[in-house]
Amino acid sequence: MRIVVVGAGCIGTIIASRLAKAGHDVSVIARGDRLANIQAHGLRMQTHGKSRIEYQDVPAFPRLTPTMTADFVIVTVQRHQIETLMPDLIANPCHNIVFMFNCVASDDQWRYPLKNRLLWAFPAALGELKNGIVHYSVLPRSLSLLQITTIGGHAKRHASAIKLMKIFNKAKIPSTFHDDMPAWLKTHAALMLPVMAIGHQKLQTQQALTLSWQEANTVAQAMQECFDLVNAADSITPLNMKLLSLMPSAIIAFSLMTAFQVAYMQTILAGHAGHASEEILQLYIEMKHLAKKQQVETPSLDKLCIELL
Image 1 (cartoon, rainbow, N blue to C red):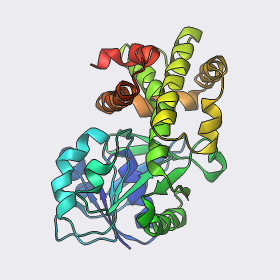
Image 2 (image 1 turned 30 degrees about the horizontal axis):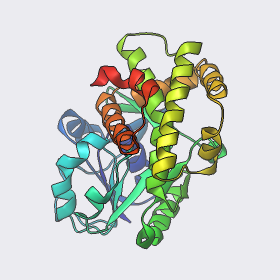
Image 3 (image 1 turned 135 degrees about the horizontal axis):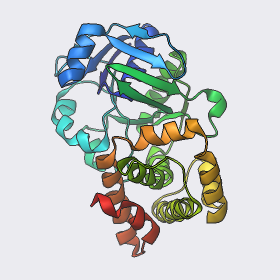
Image 4 (image 1 turned 45 degrees about the vertical axis):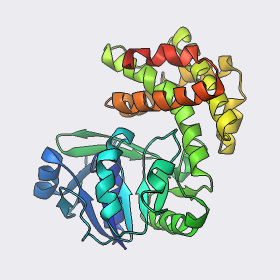
């Protein structure tokens, strides 16, 4: 398969490296120092907790052009960066444009300009870029109840989504298919937005990435506010998220406070929130748009996100 990965940050590097290692013809699109680093050294990765550096040599280019033919173009930039890429994505002839970012808003704004070539995927992976090396973890299938890379699209795109899922699984990116990705993405944002917001607050003020009872309770209440918005606008999915949304906030708060005593969970929190202020703000704006349509207040979510405005 010919695959172009647009965005060579942590997620793009993980995806591109594993697909290339599986034998696919992979190119990456990067910018500035990251582009120069890849052109000079290839993709370099290091599994969290291990010392061996993995190398993968792939072609790297500064932009996606209409002459770059591919079976899949996988876009791994953050939500707020997508608009600047749209002209290049529209001009490229690939039949499968795959977006990989958090989103609450309707995807009509991209699906129609892309003439229904849009697919969605969300990665169960995290990493940190240090000195040109991505230090990373990919969640194994054994943790699929927590999260697994999920791929889908609108009804006419299911066959392409399932094809990509099989490609990912063979490349050792454990993946599953979901037939309602807009609802899945809203649900994921409802879960992660409050967590990312508290993480960002703590990183900005150089506080420890642990949660007091008061902080955990605010996050849990904000999460329930978001779940209620999603449930009214769409549906909460998958089943584990539906069950979580039905839990009392005190139980969610206690679980959060306990979880973030663990170093691995602190790493996840730092990875999601460390350089994501614009993404958090965008998700907050989109979630508040749902709240405005439903004419409800979100005081706990506002408390977590107000400093971003």
